[in-house]
Length: 493
Length: 119
Image (cartoon, rainbow over all chains, first blue to last red; front, side, top):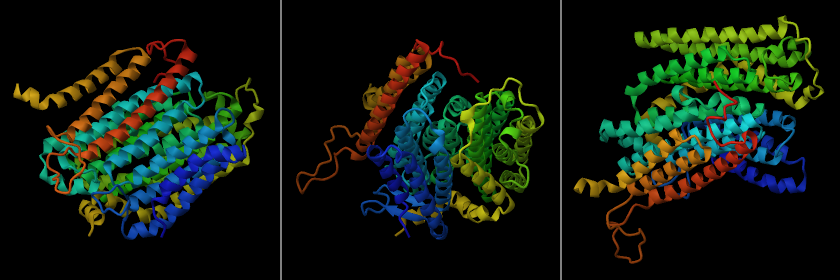
């Protein structure tokens, strides 16, 4: 068994080796992210059977927790790190030819750093280490949003940075309060001692942590940056931001609320926030004319649904949430990647300019349609399986409160169906605009067709055989919910 | 009086945080907003140090064998602050370089005039 620490160490080393490799040959740097993510994917998947048996605890410098900074590779962490590596790998392949101008070498470094940050967030067992990896993720994504250096990108990057920096400040205050209260930063150690502290002191620190992580997770009042950042970034980066980065924030919230604090009393509040986020996101998406902004708002909506499912506090609910994280990650990455070349081809981001593109770019349009149908939740795609799990979980709780919320939330899904079907209808059944200039640079290279096609195939395969992922979902949910087992595994001997 | 003197560090660092937040929320100039973020970061760092502070404590260095850990300040928050300062510097550098780019494109740093993007 390989140590999970390599999931962080190897890509990090490769990222900083890129400038040196770039001296040797100009063509090498663009392949480095592919190698790094391929390595991560192989290692993560090979770790999965071990993590399912028992979480792997990696101690640094030979000190046992709570004195060391350690990694805990449980089922949830390894599942998410596999997802990160998979999407990271496909988007890295896509990025080989997609990134045409600008500082290409720096793009590749930042790209790996962003994924390392996300991997670190899902694997760490130390709350300050969580913050550090979170910052690695955030800082590299601020820079990547502004990567093109055009006016919208820079503006979006500045907005994102201002809100993100305040969020990180709040997280740090929360960590300070936690350390002041418990005298430890190890999540398992805090979890073991949480019951000995008055609820008000817990609430204050938890409120700081949730608000801080909530900025990155794009929970409703804190998501002003998201539509700008996700739509102004290059499409490959939007795919990672929507597919992975916001999930890292949500994972941090779930880990803190469930494992560390065991705070079940704030869950109804989070459920309401989730539904509000869902409705706001979908309603804003409905009115968009810009395809990437529409996808960004749709991400907000899906994050709301995931938050709602996480707040159910039942094993099925959390399985559904994790399943939706997987399915939304795949589908949204696919949609952004496909729309990237459609925008290159038509030279415009207006939805109306994409009319009739089904004839000009048949494969891309077909894959986009698969992704859109999966997001709406149509069978046989993976989105249906995940949303169905959530609905089943809500009905399983039998509580009027959650069922009412779900009923409101389903309105959001209907709106989602409406705008995605409108786009797909435009692809196939509307004539192309008369004056559409045929951009020659829009030829889709092989390196873009492969990841987009693979994502579509994955969405269909997992949709037809949900058991592929389903086996891991149950243990992943237990990983979050079962606090005593978590504490035992980490603190151990 | 005794309340003030025993909690003066906490009052100080949370005032800094609030001043920083106020600047971010109210000032329209991008550079001032960045200064506000930094003020807030300084307040947070001070707060972290304060958490490990003991009145009249010494540095946690065991120079003599018989020395006891009582009366020494907690070194962990100081290590955290070092990390947080480094992160703060990175954010500050990135923010300032973005501000330069914003000025290049819009010819102003007034956030009320920079609104190509909106919901």
